[in-house]
Image (cartoon, rainbow, N blue to C red):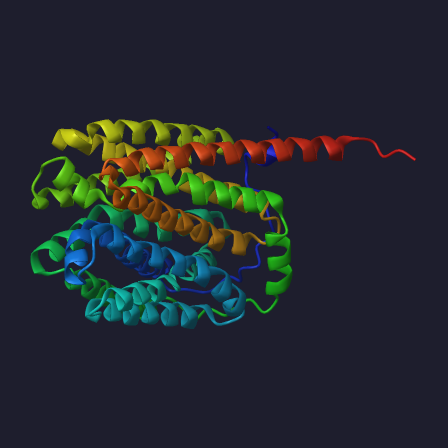
Length: 414
């Protein structure tokens, strides 16, 4: 594997510098939005049984609202990235988060499964675009040498959400009703709007952006499609078990529903640990980190299957599931930025689309085996198979890279 496959390609940075009286406060405001989205995305999994009872469907059917949100992210990223590139960025961030608040309110008042599913789809639309635009704004308010740290700080809100926001929202949903979780997410979105208005400076769009040209270059690359497929399939293994953590803990592990927030917390801590570990591994080799993360995730999910009936012994398996899975997230981001060429902005946004395809695929596949009568342990084996398939796609990507490199090095003959 050449160095080109292991390090992101340097690209022209067209993000204009923006004067900010307090860059740290601006970045914190953007990270609050990451916390809001992270909480809203994952809290549904912790109160899935309560949602199922509330809209009078089975738990596997209720799992489709998770898939609906993920599909909303997938649909929203290219549309909003294409049409919003030239808009003033602070105004776009405010509009995206205001829409997020409205659609969470719609989720909270939904009286039927179909309305709730539609609301979750709509709520997913701003997700990826927010992170893409917020990353650009964060990079624009600091000096060039600090841009990487600024973008990482925005993403930190997503990790913190899985440690603090999601367990808290799960507790609220179990004790005050599942609708409270979506009301909480709407309130957080409102707080984010105010924070952005107060702390983030007015930021112009990029008038030189050519959405059509970037889209042609990005979507015309086989390596881009293989990388997104590896993320969409391989990371789906994590969501096959995460989506059904609540009934697995109570019905398979035999624990009380009050213990579910502890398992959700373990999943969140695993994400934080895996994100840190991914950064360390990336300095060694992005591609090898992806392979190692995929293989490790498959092994942990097999262990998850056997530990599920053991009650509290499932806790470390839950932690390791998200820890190994998060190694994939960060390094897939780097890999996608590498193969995206000059369309780095679209590549960064589309990473969220690929990972939310994984969310939808994992939740759907897990629901299928549960509905077929194989029980709440079965999604772990489905997840392991998805992780292995993701590794195979990465190996395909490596083979394509080798063939391309060999062809490029051959001398031109008459």
